Picture 1 (cartoon, rainbow, N blue to C red):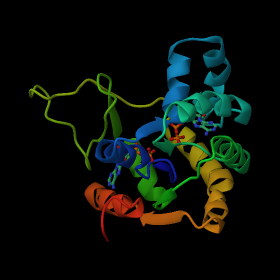
Picture 2 (picture 1 turned 180 degrees about the horizontal axis):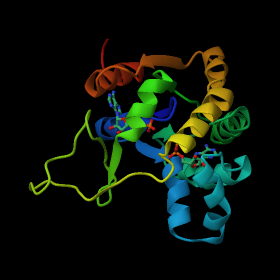
Picture 3 (picture 1 turned 120 degrees about the vertical axis):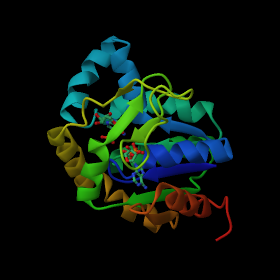
Picture 4 (picture 1 turned 45 degrees about the horizontal axis):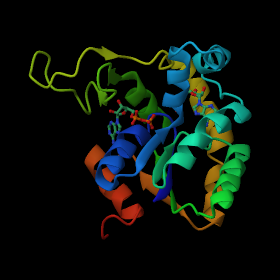
Length: 213
Ligand code: ADP
Ligand code: ADP
């Protein structure tokens, strides 16, 4: 299985990709995580890309393509989350797939209006220990002090209102037009991401052929 999960920040890509990984065994490759790991490790490359990340701007194509490629080569089955984000990256992905003689199966797009997205990102919390993503209202973590308590939780540094708006603008300008690109290839499926998490998961599983409709 080779699929892309696409959609604006806060639509639920990470949440759904994690469920899909669990259900299918395909590897969840999240380029935002690769970027944050590189920065946290304090490498030369990490220092170079830190400013883009803090401003909520895209890291240059050449860098992100070089960072992503090894993960695509290593895994036969993957769910790509956060890549491609513009035409250049989509073309680079096509070239990589041509090289290994494989095709993309599906591009699943999660759709929700900006006001819903801003509310979701403001309430997003991540467990430091497990990396699991929660929402203070819609998907609260197990209770503090309970046996499964995955706390403490952190908020991402770029989940500030200004960086969120910047990232959404870039999505609408550069990433959203890729819907046409994949529609023309006949592999695009669009899903209403304003539904409950479990309902969205049902739709995603149907879209990738893991469940009958
Ligand atoms: P977002 O919520 O903005 O989609 P991500 O966690 O996916 O956040 O990515 C965090 C940051 O990593 C982005 O703001 C950008 O700086 C960088 N990044 C991730 N994926 C890409 C990509 N495909 N192209 C360029 N930059 C990327
Ligand atoms: P993305 O990877 O697309 O940026 P996330 O999966 O990180 O989005 O989800 C953003 C926030 O919204 C998280 O706090 C998550 O718990 C919450 N969330 C995800 N899907 C839904 C949903 N269908 N309904 C309500 N909240 C959701």
